[in-house]
Each structure stands twice: as structure tokens, then as C-alpha cells.
Image 1 (cartoon, rainbow, N blue to C red):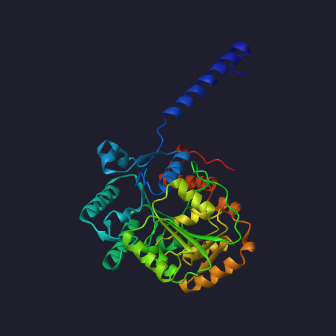
Image 2: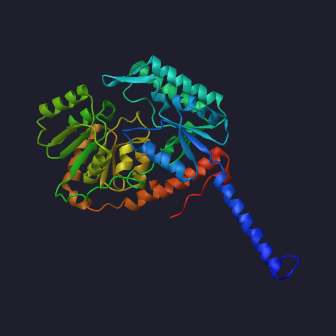
Image 3: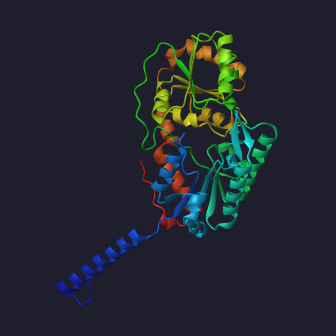
Length: 384
């Protein structure tokens, strides 16, 4: 009872408590949420960036673009607030431009890259660099070696490094965070149920580029196996693939669809797949985005044995590995002939546990709380 006794004292105490609660509520509303300044802020060909932004917002951050235009419009103040974070994806691509299927060093791109490096060095906000690749895609010779040095340079500049492949934590002095599943993220396009087939449909989906080594796969493709290839590609590389298809008389077996797929079309192509093939060069990317489109939905994934895929194969019994493309024909024929034994997809629950939306919210919330150094400002992720 409030000192002074009686109903009047109790009433006064109740009013004080209510006022304190209202004041606390106003403080919570007026509290400035920490910011993630993100580069790039948009990517029209990949929902990954949008999913990342949704993750940061869901754990208590406002997300703003980290761009020259945004900084000139007043965003430069955010660079000097230590509670904020600068988050970079694929910064190593800035010095290069794509020309005739290869990535070449660009003067303008190099100046933009230098600008962002200056932002990293001058700002007080903590810098988080997501390391996605070992080298810039489609670089060769000097440009490839340079791109690897640029990646190493940005790793040294950053306060925190993040990888989606656990085996690269130690060599990159990085934090592992799960790559979100596309199909479990908010706003994922709906898709129709998979048709029942007596023989599997093999697919290779996404951009049609040399680093995926699709030409090497077609050179050995068994004519009895049905393959659907879909995605945007350059004229030169498509000509190479069509020449192989014609030379090996694979028109009845291989369907090559060269065009950009919308998010909904890509999601449906994944849902229609029985077996997804990921033949990417082992020294290219750390993980394959298509893996996170497919795992938990596609019954079988056949992938080159990169460090991440070897880790995934230990986690998921529907991931089949090959070291050299020459091993593919035997694997394909084995899956084709015994397809009925691959009917169920047992990896759905496991995929959600490892890479699902709630799992990512927990991991990202804990990491960003540590990186930002302001535990009170970050909302705790909800549990399942």
C-alpha cells in the first residue's frame, strides 16, 4: 500500500504507475532504431538482397541505402554513428564491368570502389562484409588474380566478415550465418505442385554463364536423361551450348530456354524439378544461391564437391556429390534408372531447421546485437 494509507493513497500510486508506463511507452516510440546502411540496396535479378533487408528490419534495424546519392542527401551523418552498421555484399564487383561474357577492369568502377573504401575508412559505423565468392565471376588471368586480391583487401578493411559456408570461418576469420531459404522467406511467390513422373526431370537453372561449366556437362550428357536448362545467357556462350547439343544429337533430351526468369517463374521451375544439378566451378563461389532455392523442395541435388557442398551432403542425405564432371554420367543414369526409390523428400524439415526464416532471425539477431554493440536496441527474434 502507498505510504499515507487508505484508498486515496492506493489511487495515487495507481496513477503514478500508469503515468510511468505511458512515459516508458513514449520513450520506446521515440527511441531511434539503429540503422543498417546496405550496399547494394537493390538487385532486380535476385531476391537475396530483399530477404536480407527483411531480416535486418525483423530484428530491430532500419535499413537505408549506402549509395553516393543517399550520402549526398544527408545520409553521411549515419556514417559517424557508432551504433549503425555498414553492410556490404559483392563490393569486389564494383571495379569490373561485364563485356562479351567476361569481366574486365573498369576505370569508373575502380573509382566507385575507391569511394566505398574511403567510406569504410572514414566512418565510425561498424563494417560488415559478406564474403560470397573466392573470385569475381567470369574473370580470367590478371583480372581474376586481381579480383581475389580485392576480396582479401576488403576482408581486412571490414570489422566483421560473414560467410554462408561454415568451412570458411577460420581461413577468413569470419562469422557463419545461414543463407536464408528463398521458399520460406516472406513474400515468396506461390507455385503449383510438382507433377508426378515415371522418370526424373533434371534441371540447371539460373544465369547461363561459363563459370557454371554447363558446356562440360553437355559434352557428357546421357541421351536417355531429360534435362531442362533455363536462364539468361550471353549469345557467345549460348552458341557454344547449342553447338554441343547439335553435335551430340541431344535435341530430344535437352531443352535450352534462354531468357530471364521472373521470381515466380524461377520458383515454379524449382518446384517442377526432380533433380537439380549444380556443376559450378569449385574455385568460384562459396555457396550456390540455387541450393537455397531447392533444398527442402527438390528431391535430389547433384553438386560438385566444394567445401560447402561437402558440408551440406553430411547434413542432407539427398545431396549427391561429384569431384569431376566425368563422374556425372554414371550418377545420372543411376538416379534415372532407380527413380522410384527417390520418391519422398525427407529434407524439408531439416532445411527449415538449418536455413529457415526463424532460424535466420535468431542467428542474425544475435550477430547484429554483437556487431552493433547495443543489445537494448535490437528486438529479440521470436521462437518457433
